[in-house]
Amino acid sequence: MGVMNRFMSGIAFSAAIVTGAALGLASTQAKANLISDGDFSLPNQGGGWSIYSPGTNGWVNTNNDGVEIGTSPIYGLPCANAACQQLEVNANTFDTDGQSVSGLTVHQAYTLSWLYGGRTSGGPDFLNVYFGGQFLTQDSNSIGFWTLNSFTIVATSTTEDLIFSSVTTNGDPSFGNEITNVSLNATPLPSTWTMLIAGFIGLGFLAYRGTKKGSAAIAAA
Image 1 (cartoon, helix red, strand yellow):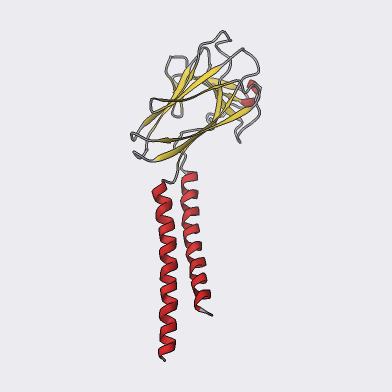
Image 2 (cartoon, rainbow, N blue to C red):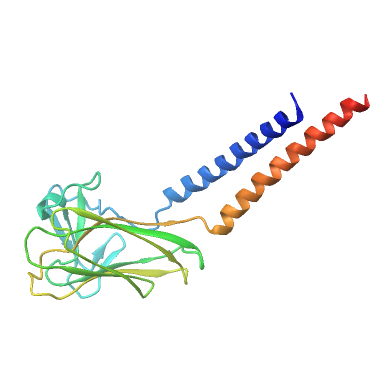
């Protein structure tokens, strides 16, 4: 095998190592959803719905109305997860529901995502979403179907509040603003990928040096 072939083999081997490390990192992060019961699968509603006061499984209501968990078709929406359940922010009125998320790393980037759906009856609905005190977006419409929201946020504290707050409208106060599949996962920082690339280059260089030394030993013999 020539020097160039050995060099390319070293590069390929290094790429495999770095790719494996990257996939391992991505897999670990994909499993680390920091949101408690983001698909609202518990308690199981058995095809119905219930209101829990002041909340359940990390989710709390801040205006003394309780957290409503229900089966998606009841609200005119398709199943979006195995449990086929969701949270209706408007339980009995235009509510504010949320969760205090702990275990964050300051300055770490995270991907926050959720599905928003509009109930097929009840009038207009608008939902303001906040994380760590910062306004992210206002969801609306999406009547009868789910719309994906996804944001990259950076933690400023080890604990941050995720808030879904209904906007008062002339619609029915106890119908609408549906959410499910809420997730918060760490995303690789640019420095992480830089280190992986640097490792890839370094391993390739070491492989190349090894082939040169081997060739010199053969020539000397």
